[in-house]
Length: 436
Image (cartoon, rainbow, N blue to C red; front, side, top):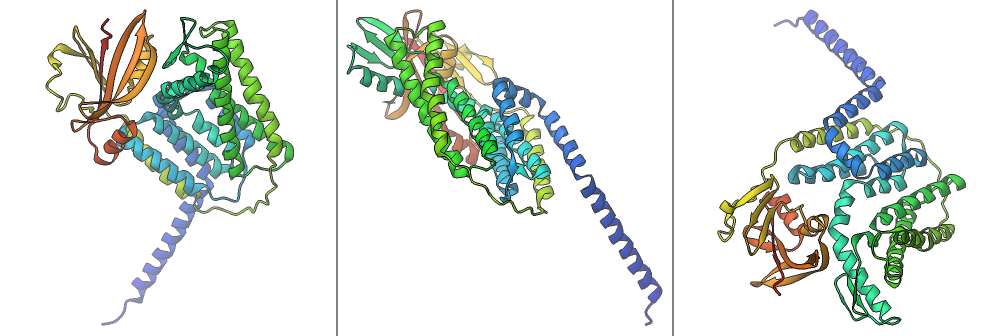
């Protein structure tokens, strides 16, 4: 059988034309790469408009300052940051996808923006990147969950210190009894907002020092300086509480805020200005290399964020009342919203909620003063006991997380169960007045 060379010749010509067309398409994609990526980024941001608005509302000033810091403080680096940033996006979005966590999704969007900026300019600011993470809504949640525990620990330390100088009758949680008078340390006295302000000030200080020296701090130096700033913040809050108690000025007024600002300046800003002199940035030789994986990393990140964005927009089924103990009469209850179910009886007020609604935050928001929070055992199971008061009426509040009819006191434990086993988790809170 003869060979038809004519058809073979035509087939080779077609393959050559296809290769030229593919090269031309690839050339056009690479030529307009930035335009395409910018367009895709804008579409993703518009798709997540409500999440971005909520994220900026919680810390608008801090986020804007962090963005400005990232732009002015970015510098070229020899490190290939595509894969670390992509890995971080994947972890954040995996958790967001499984747990429907909008705060982590907002942080993933922020990391994605940093990845795009790095791909376009080849520059990155580790200092500003830490600042962006700090002002994300994730850290707001972190602060809210730890406020009560931090406050009680600091108050106990203050009590042990002041007993060496003045006569204190006793301490109950955050209540100091001095000469038969009660002094309550509220959340405003903690100065937790100064924590983020102090770290942002430290970030600006490091950035200015880099520009002044025309050199750059190492990641180890940046992390060490941040740890020192955190330690200074604890010291500042410690002396702030001592001063407020000695001046009997725990209620918000001009003197209260003045003491807070002076402690912040003396115990945080001044030491930072002194310590920065011992941190010497180093000049690093930058080797300019073309990264061929930048577009691939950006496209993978786009796919991950797009899938999670569509998932988060769907309604979530919380299953709060599924397999609930029959002692809770749900016929007498009502839905406050889709995340909170309320049962009101003459003896108790019972809330069945999603795990994110920590009772300490809710009660504080309703004007209650938390005087003590501790872990206890009831029926051989660990739960939380809270003492609180409002309008001179004292209450006991008990709460715990519940999964498969087992009680837990750690949010991390139940979130890990939900993350890997996709089981429904609820929070149960029972509150009653203290009987006289």
